[in-house]
Amino acid sequence: MMDQIERHRLEDALDCAASWKAEAMQYKALLVEARRAIGDHSAPDDCYATGPLTGDPFRDLVQCPACSFIAMYDEAIAQAPSPESVA
Ligand SMILES: [Zn+2]
Image 1 (cartoon, protein in one colour):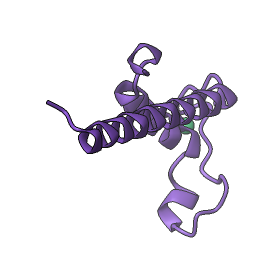
Image 2: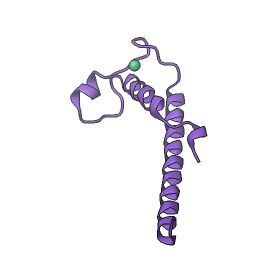
Image 3: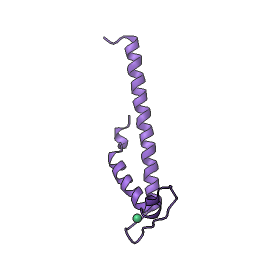
Image 4: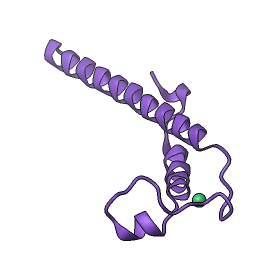
């Protein structure tokens, strides 16, 4: 049987999980908006190499920031929680 302390710990854990899921959904929404801001981007015609400078010569002079973001976005969004999984 669950005592009072165990019940409080379980409630705290559930609150923490709900908070984490809500935060994850906010980050997912942020990613979706950033992807929407880039819009259609077809490599190599739409690519450009000089975006906001990072200090990394390869990234600043060679790597297209839009392509780099889209690759990260596709990977992150595939792992993001769906709204149905948020308690
Ligand atoms: Zn590109």
